[in-house]
View 1 (spheres, rainbow, N blue to C red):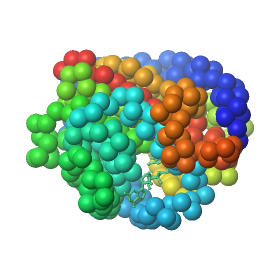
View 2 (tube, rainbow, N blue to C red):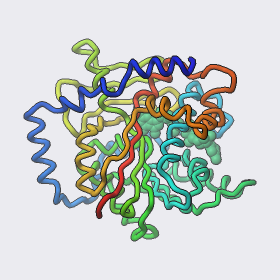
View 3 (spheres, helix red, strand yellow):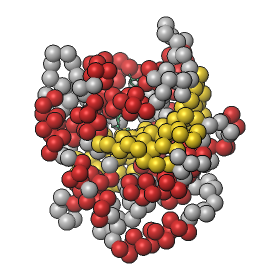
View 4 (cartoon, rainbow, N blue to C red):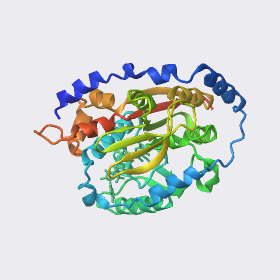
Length: 350
Ligand code: GTG
């Protein structure tokens, strides 16, 4: 697919056209109930909020083997993976200053380590609910640290479900404030319950310096719901040759706990996720002193940044496109890339 095709596709899929879910949101009854809940929960005492689904998610990632770089290059969705990693590099590049202290909530196997290195950060604390992923991240970190070109920053990793436990339970970072909190491809798990979503935000905000940034990537519920609504009245599943999204019901759209199962070839195998109603997320974030400063669909981030010299060069370096050849991402991969958005919040008050 050529860059021109990308542009054409993108303009067809203008983000503004996808406002339905965000604007119509909940029906009036649900909306009133939801707002009452938000009010009554302002003083909620956030305690352990782990759910059986946290275990399912942890088990899913515990079972996912770290295949290594060579085997990863054989992936059927390699271009999509590279594209998504490039998008994360752009988001990091636009928001992270050199010498920053980073808290990565949901660091997985350390897939962003090289991006943090490129961003010339000072410290990284990586947290994840999957103990196997944390062990893999530690191994990757050891390789990078001991490599020919040492990482140049300090890193430590801990097992913690940041959506169910306060970060203060990790002694070494109890009173540490960070310049940036990062949550990549994981916030959607927190929208299982309001308590979990609040715990995610409380942890992000209470560990950020004033003026610091909370950045991330998450599924675009607006796009997902729009797609769901184009199906036959009884149909609950859509996707293409590389991904599928399967709902249990679509007659009600609760703000929290609206579950679907996500499959992505060679990456995610039937894992439960939850729609993130972004206006609710934004409203709740404000309660924790976080103001939205950036929100864009992956397609739009691509179209906006691909001509920027440094990011264009990175497109080649990260093998998203090959020099002198058209981009090699398939239509199916491009559609799957459209499931996500990138965001950034600024901490404006404590
Ligand atoms: P993935 O984690 O398999 O991506 P990779 O890029 O292969 O990661 N996606 C992911 N998540 C978590 C979700 C989710 O929760 N919900 C939804 N809806 N979608 C999700 O994920 C693949 C795709 O799945 C994503 O793009 C999303 O679309 C979706 P990784 O293997 O960690 O590679 C990242 C970087 O690390 C690359 O630069 C690699 O070269 C590098 N790397 C890989 N292996 C190694 C290694 O052994 N050592 C070192 N040092 N670096 C390595």
